[in-house]
Length: 80
Image 1 (tube, one colour):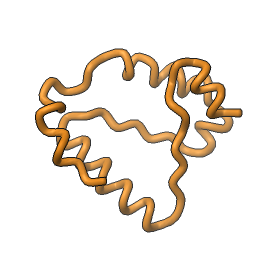
Image 2 (cartoon, helix red, strand yellow; image 1 turned 90 degrees about the horizontal axis):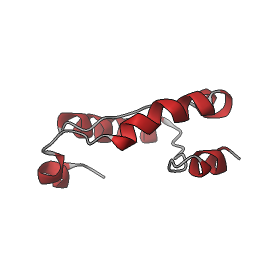
Image 3 (cartoon, helix red, strand yellow; image 1 turned 60 degrees about the vertical axis):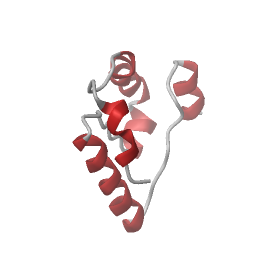
Image 4 (cartoon, one colour; image 1 turned 45 degrees about the vertical axis):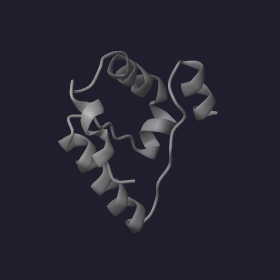
């Protein structure tokens, strides 16, 4: 239901990561993206479940404006 709501409002579906290993891996990737000048947005399960419309409204402007000007040149350095 939430994924459909986000997609219907022009946003990508959510990705759910749980557990310590996922948290550590996500932290490394998030920090690498931030170092490249990209914007990183974090949402909790409660944000997705209880505040989806507010989250959607917060994300839409971020998706409509370009991130750091040099991100395309440096994108190959992001860990996966």
